[in-house]
Image 1 (cartoon, rainbow, N blue to C red):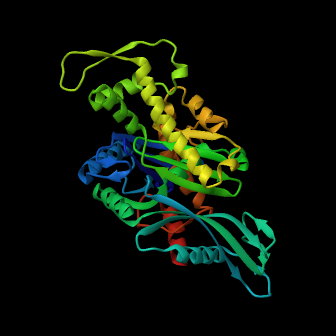
Image 2 (cartoon, rainbow, N blue to C red; image 1 turned 30 degrees about the vertical axis):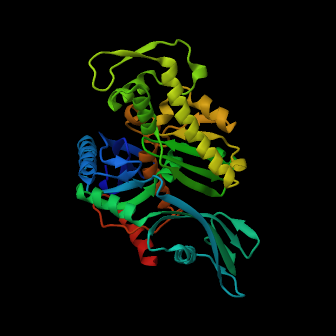
Image 3 (cartoon, rainbow, N blue to C red; image 1 turned 180 degrees about the vertical axis):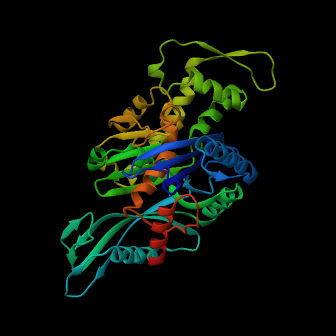
Length: 412
């Protein structure tokens, strides 16, 4: 194995932290060669509440991934998600006078820099500038303008930003765990790369990633990303709802949610009584399976309805003709597809990681789409599909990554 073709992805979530080591071969195919996972502590709704706990979680996941792969991990590409993520769609142009010229990578980078300068604010950090489409001489729309002739180049871009303090705190905590941050990728962006198919993009598709503390979602159309947002609510809210309704410890609420939980009362066939122990009591009580499912359904319905209402306000919901893709740990809830269909009236499927080999027995599940997607996104961005403006660090694990990032950095 050539170590200069290795990527390490770090997904720091509210409930779990995952580290994956991937190798990209000469054909560009991704193989997962290392895996590590730890329970996350110290993050609430996507925000760091106890740095020391987060550091311990990261260290545990990274050590496992390093041991299973035999790779010494010094740098990672990490995720960013949660309600502090926001997006903007921006456009600008370059005019070359009356003479047509060959469009180059430098022209694309110059145009993206103009867009970047329009949105810079003291409290925001720009994470991605993703090209949506280009227009040559006000009439010819193209996806890839390089090597085309034009006297004017116009571009539309999907920008992902985050709060500067959130970005800085997460970066600092990861590096305090002993690894450098080579780059960041936003959760919903990464997730689409490991779950969404080109045919869905052509029709317009909505990806909803429901994790432990947040729900990230993005709309992807034929011209790339259209709309990206996040809500500070997720699977942990369901656990808390169960805990509060039945007066039971949170860990017990999580256990019965996983063991007995389903997404809709309509799907409940054999109702049963569930034994639980109230807080502070050593005497069991029995709660209704119907009431448990009622609690789960109410919260899931709220989350999905909030997403639909937001997309309707943004006048983008009608663009979603390719269906809904549900990912994240909560997507494992039985019959959640039925509930989502009732709310969105669109075809729904559960998204699992694709376009990789190795460790499929461990990571072929919705909760791993972000970690796999980080690698696929970065692999794709090396072919200049995305103009990365995060500040890269020097790293040992990928010579070809360093060359690409250094080239882009020199442009800016």
